[in-house]
Length: 118
Image 1: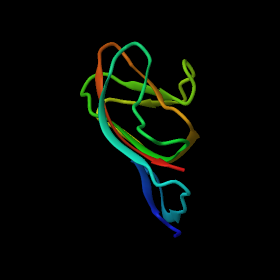
Image 2: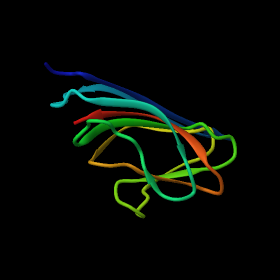
Image 3: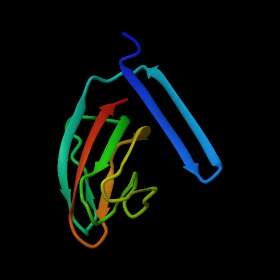
Image 4: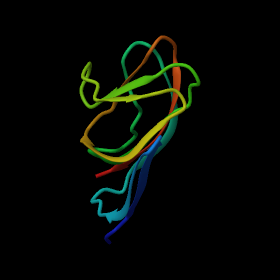
C-alpha cells in the first residue's frame, strides 16, 4: 500500500506592510504499521516519550498543552532541536530516529503527540 500518511501545513505572517505565506500538502509511504498516540506528563528531568512497539519513528506531531512552560524535544539525550512554546504545536514532521527525549522548562507539562512508524 502507498500514501498511508497525509501531510498538510501552512504558515502565514502579517505585520504592518510585511506579509508572507506558504502552504503545502502531500502524501508519504511507510513500511511499518505501528503508531502511538498519547498524552504524557513531561517533567523537568529528561525523559523518553513512550513509543510502544515502534522501531524507527517516521512522521510525528507534538502539542504542548501547558499554558505557561515550554518543552524541549530531541532525538538524542541532552541534544534538543525543537522547543515548543506553551499552548503551541509542531508538525507534521519527519523524525527518523528511534526515540524522542523531552524536558520541560520550570514545571511539568502535558505533551500530546502522535508517532507513526517509518
